[in-house]
Length: 207
Image 1 (cartoon, one colour):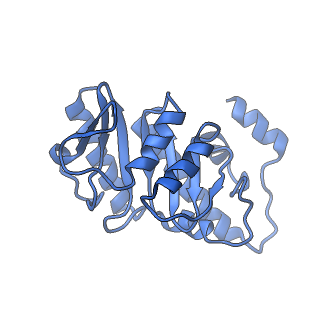
Image 2: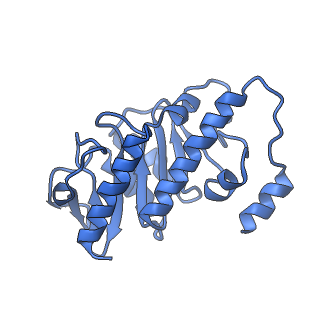
């Protein structure tokens, strides 16, 4: 896919997520690996109205080479790419239900959400919680890096999810599945719930 088409796809999928309430204002950011570096949504931009031509371009060393200045959370994206060489795109949102779950005091930091649905088990798997650190800090990027070698999706405490995928669509779909699972988890709190068994999850992960 040409870089122009990748830019257009970033803008199109970003607008779709924004219009469906998955992110708000100038929150959230997206990056995609290209042949000679990365494309990344600019700092202070809204995912609802991106200009494809102004999306940031970074070279292989992570240096800004064209377009508007990249998101200040670019370090989160770099950490995921460095630890997961097959990652083709990263999505980071402040989606309401995922953020709400990240604020709960009684969740398991090793695996935040139980296996509620088959698609959550297949697209996300195990979701670790990263302790709260200020957005944009190098310490936060390092915390993500430490988890990324084993997990393509992590949840930042009181902040939101960071999800990598082999393609932009894979990363977007997985992020949406995580948000849906978080919504279901909150709806079911306090109710007797039948989660998937360990055997069912193991079979799904083979798929």
